[in-house]
Image (cartoon, rainbow, N blue to C red):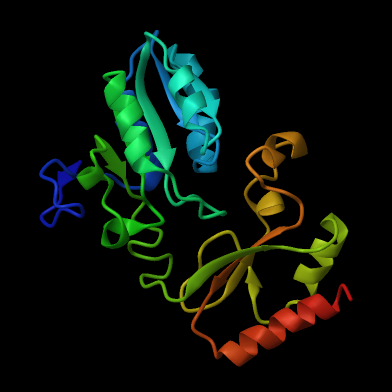
Length: 240
């Protein structure tokens, strides 16, 4: 681990590790021990949820998953053994924004830590530390640095009017927009979260945070907008 020379949130205790999940694991495992408990929101990064719910129990650390926007449930989930609350804002793929102030208030009321994954916002757009969060996590391979060194464009999510079959036919109709799990860079990428990121999760489980069959995430690149629109129209014509 290495101290950043330029600390991304203007904070003096910043460390760098080799990937985002290493940062998540380091933050949790360095502060939680056997017999302790944490609370995490259901719209957090899938791999973080997997680590918390499937890996941490092997270390004797338990967790309660609560709806992201239900702050009463978050407060009620805190027990005498709870050491931290983990939330993400904005989330992936829905871009839901947490009430960081409320997360911090709940954590402080119970004298526990608040941990915010601010990967999608980056320190340029959001600074949870200034709102009182104890720990902020960034995966620098995402928006902060970009999957292609530089990231351009915007992220859009939408739902196909239909079912899984119609959604797949829409995706099959695309010729320019490439199917891929990342946020892209100069090129436009389209992602079907249900099958790309949540392929190993049951439909019932992924529907809970809103990962439905018809959900599509479009990471808009730097191509001519007319070309992107024309390609989307090709996809839609495939289900007309």
